[in-house]
Length: 112
Image (tube, rainbow, N blue to C red):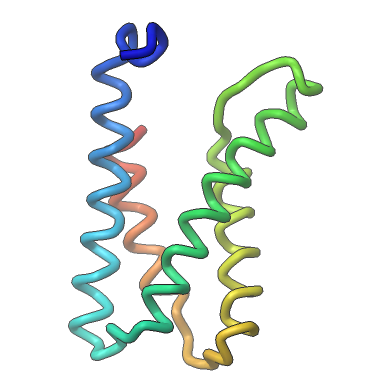
């Protein structure tokens, strides 16, 4: 195990649990609303990837490129923008913000 992960094993476990809980809540809500389609799943993965990229980019820009880490605001902005772009590319027109809002809140409650 890399030294950084060995030192922060508990933090890594909480981050992973937060991501898993967010995906589980998203899946549950999508299924309840009968929106569990391939397009919605692609949209969720676009939001996750954009959120991770935005969180890292926000920290990198905020520190002048001298620090690694993540920012919550960068993650929210990156995820939001990536979902907008993905919805246009996939041709999805239904509202999805409520699915992401609850999933993001649940994931942040555990992962932070």
